[in-house]
Image (spheres, rainbow, N blue to C red):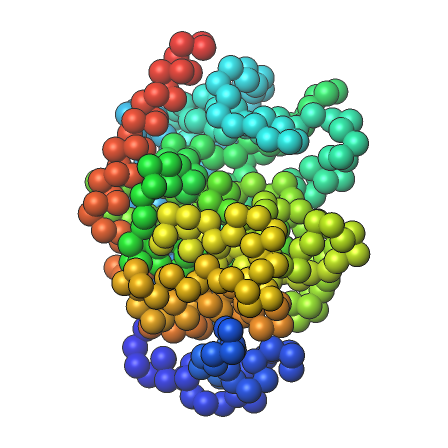
Length: 404
């Protein structure tokens, strides 16, 4: 982004910035009493997205920039995300084998299926992740999984989200088929206490913010953002380009538009990434889409430090009261001031003091340091992820072959 474009975002025209009076009324936001400058000026999400490297206004990759994103990606002879349009062969309806489980949760299990698809006139094998949700569960009624399907459908053309392929159902279960990402989710990179450098964390967070901003523009609140729902993949394993996809919309909800202040009141989410305003002990507590921004701050903190910022709801309460702050130590690990300020902004205890996802895109850590060129990561992380992606895909293919 050139200086002329930067200047238009830092023009000093606070009157044109479309935020509520309760947020940033003085052109600053505060963390523990410390004011930070906030870029004023008009804001256009599609315009800003189109100016970020490798993305169009709809959050799609620009043609010719992302390696193999618009062509076939074949690893070990198996097609993985990024290929052209595909469809299940009309001669054979898929019957899910459910032989290779890769995950399970409160409301379902996820399996990998190898499916024959027609692409560009040829039949090829493709791996899908299929989520099986039981019907008739009182705590997970039909309208809930149908809402998940609707949200996946609304976002399926966007490269920042796990691609929804189709859904089927029988008398006992609903099946949601999605693309399979062999590298898995971000939490797997923390298993050996690996700490991401600021540059590599920036590559992930920048894409996540764009994805969350697009979700919120579509009036969708995720409500359970965490590393386990952030999926990583290398479009071309030979290149150090890391792409990020948001997944698992089982707790997401479409909400009406009301300047980021439409209230939700269902307690959901994961404790370590749950915003202060989401109180599990208070069924009357309300919150807004800004809970997703808080979760982004928690994900960034864990990537940089190797630890979650809050172990319990008591930790969150103590932080909200100014008694104990996990941010006290981040200034001593070699981060830039812009990164520290970004953490402070996203982890504002009060929602009115916390920027929206759109506003996060204008914070200095994002606008002054676009991930360039094209979401490239450092060589050490690329080597780790490249090795893991190849190993995971080989192991998965072996499991599928054994189960066949």
